[in-house]
Length: 418
Image 1 (cartoon, rainbow, N blue to C red):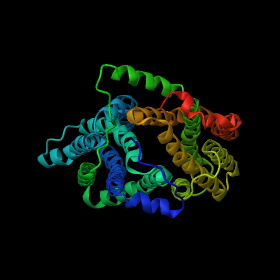
Image 2: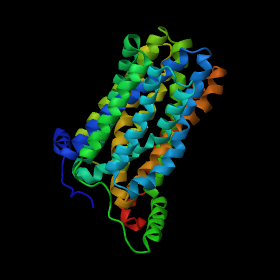
Image 3: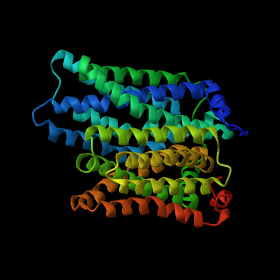
Image 4: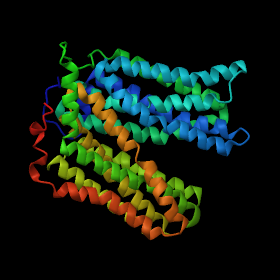
């Protein structure tokens, strides 16, 4: 059962969310673990690059790191819905922590197999969706409805900080202590997250039916979930936007290498502008809930974010392009915060694990599509076509959302979810 809603807004939403002991513990543990994750990929990448044929091995490492996410994401949802999320999150941390710790432990004995980094990367990818789905699925049980925008924004802020701190800290430590020691630090971060999850007092498992109709009821609810037009439409809109962002993550390095002055420093500036925008946008979204229909607020933010892709046409003016990256981050972060609150409102408690795991897996799967689509366009030098494709992919679904009937958001009861 959901915690009772109450009105909230401004910075008070952050204070109230963090005042809850259980949410505060889980959020802090998750944030520390995310920073460790940022350090891990840098350490693993450096480890394989230090070997003969390191460039080819780096490609294989990336595949091992990302490909299992899709499989794991589809499997983890029912587990989160069946078992107490505290224990699922703790077990995930224990497994991944042991996997990461195996590299420094075996290196200390001088018997580390050459394939071990790839096995660790695959285990990480397979289990990655456990916290990505488990943490938001737990928020409705820990935070009142009026403060969920703030709680969701805190999760987004954790991702932003971890994206900036983790890789940078990992790079600094690599020079002084080596890859194996950096991985040992990440193993400790998993231990801390497991401890935080186990320290949560409130059970994080919904009540289940005990008669023979449980599986039938679950099947009916899943079917109703797929018939919820608002959930389907917003997910498709986000998948399209993520395709555009996947294209941007190829366009940015390509521009820095071939069309913008400054090279690698310019690439760092572009990515920093995107991260700063995401951090600021998430903070603003958590401090103030949308005053209009949330669906319209999400669509409006997505359209404004889509205009940021047009700034790529400012090439070769670096700061004009960076301003576009900033706009994309600034308005895409509120989309994520508000949409996550909307999903928490519409997905019933017994299906939150499956719901968040499935939706986040689908959205995580689309950026590589964008990267694959834009590569042949850039090979022919048609930057304008790439910009047009990114802008249309990002904006068109949002325009469709704005064109939907005003009563769509209020039609939750007709979906059969409750």
